Figure 1: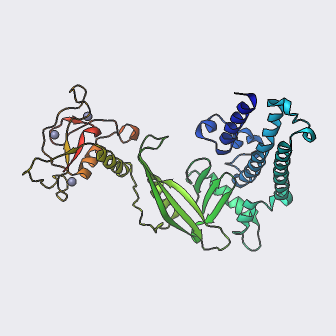
Figure 2: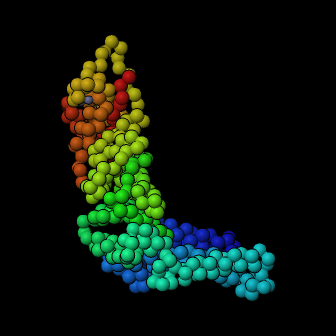
Figure 3: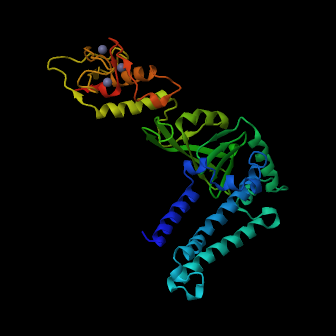
Length: 361
Ligand SMILES: [Zn+2]
Ligand SMILES: [Zn+2]
Ligand SMILES: [Zn+2]
């Protein structure tokens, strides 16, 4: 590969990592917050001031990226004479002007925001909508700063979309912005949920809820927050107000409930057990409501060695009860081991794994 293409690829990868900061990049400390922590000040001490500076600096640095590519190209491809802009090919001249303009516009914007003690910054303007008639955004900021310092605040989500709920405020911190709403005049509504059988970082099932936050104050922009269903109760406790459920989303509050959904999905992928003709399916002996619906067959190791054992029980349990039994025998502290573990059959104690659970037809 020629040096131009090499540099282009490397720069594109660098830019994507810098803008979207995947967890590997974050743990290596390559974030605006980490690199410029001196200038940004402590988030714990002055939360609002920290985010005003962080969002401004983030905007400036991201707007430097297009020009950075041009500067890098000057060295990666010296034969194009890019160092002398007036001699460069027309396409490059255009690229240079546009990226310079982007940077200049962002500088002017940052300068405008920073005037009169950051009064024009979007965060400050958002805060001033909550200020009392005689006071300014600073009073609101100091109330938020004080509440953020308390250790009993609710905090969740990744670095690019954090949700923070203090005693009186609901906040969402994202890369460029900070949304703020007062508990007493906002309505929270669960609008959507997404279930992931396995989350990449936890290696356990997760349900992500989308909750819309709408304020009675017409000057406050509505926004969405996302969090794990297992954090829902904690959020509700912190809010002292009910959260509406507009879409009738089923919320799985505990790990076992979440696991049950995953268990059912996995069992559906297994082979189906054909019930011998004439054999009636009895009601499940766990719940006495559904009819028995699962049979344990050692399918994971056909040759017979390994930890799983043969179970000769007839179908006696429904899928839900079997899933609950499976979940109840797990180490509650280590959800990542649940799918791969073996548990004894509830009737004969023969060990089985999730691959051995077959639905009955
Ligand atoms: Zn049952
Ligand atoms: Zn059995
Ligand atoms: Zn097995």
